Image (cartoon, rainbow, N blue to C red; front, side, top):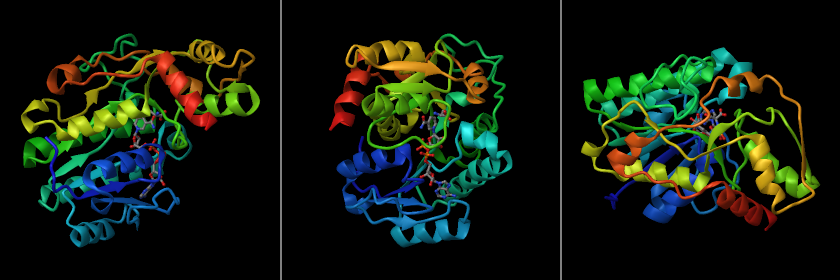
Length: 314
Ligand code: NAD
Ligand code: SER
C-alpha cells in the first residue's frame, strides 16, 4: 500500500538509477516530497529541490533528515565493481560507512524505512552460475561484491536487533536510456546502444559469449517501489532478494540490435572487467521475490532492445 505522506530522500540521486528513481517517485508522491541529493548537482532535477550531500558526512545527513522530516531514504551512493577495483580502500569506506549512517538514522527512529541496493556481485567464482539460487555459496572476488555482501548481513542484523525496516534487491546489470552508467562491469550493455546509433560499431570490453543477468531500468525501478510498498510481513528476507530479469551475452544482444540496424558490427577487446564478469552468475533464480511480494518481469531481450533504440533515437 502506498503511504500518502511519504517524504523521500534519495542519496546518490545523480547516478544511473537515481535520476529515474527520482522521476518515478516524484510522480507517485509529488515533486515537493522527493528530495534528490548527491555530491554535486547534475542538472537532472528541474522540478525537485536538490540538496548537496556527502553520504560520508553523518552530521550533514542527520541535519538534512531533521530539516525535511523524511520518512524514507533510498541510499544509492556507492562505488561500483569496475571503479571499486581501481580504488579498493575508498570503495570499502564509501560503501560501508554511508550504509551505517543510514541504518543508524532508522535505528534512532529518525526515518521509518530504508531502501539499499545490493548486487549480483555478492556471488563469486565458487557460486553455481546457472539459475543461481537465493541461498548458495557466496565468495565475492571484488571489493564491491565484498562490500555488498557485508552490507546485506548488516541490514539483516539491524532488522533483527533494532527492527529497522530495511529492504533490498540484488540488482542485475541495469539498462536504461535516461541516464549514463557509473563504472560497472555491465555498463557495456548500455554503451552498445549509444555507439550503435552513433557509429554503427562498438568495441566491447567483455568477450562475445560472456552471459550476465541484466534488466531494463523500468523493471528495476518498478521492483524497487514494489518491494518498498509491500506489507512488512511479506518481506521475509532482510538481507537482499535475488532479482531476475533476462540473461544475454554481448553476441546475443548484438544479434538483437542487428534486427534493427543490420549493418551494426561489434569487435571484442576484453580488459580487467572480463575476470569480474567471469566470476558472476549467468542467470538468477528469483522465486523468493516472486513468491513473497509478487515480483514479475516485463521486459524480455527483444522488447528491451526495441525500447532502448526507439528512445535513444529521439
Ligand atoms: P552510479 O555510479 O551511476 O551513481 C552513484 C551516485 O552516487 C553518483 O551520482 C555519485 O555522484 C553519487 N555519490 C558517490 N559518492 C557519493 C557520496 N559520498 N555522497 C553522495 N553521493 C555520492 O550508480 P548506480 O548505477 O546509479 O547505482 C546505484 C546503486 O545501485 C549502487 O549502490 C549500486 O551498487 C547499485 N547497483 C547498481 C547496478 C547497476 O547496474 N547500475 C546494479 C546493481 C546494483
Ligand atoms: N552493474 C553493476 C556493476 O557492474 C552490478 O552491481 O558493477
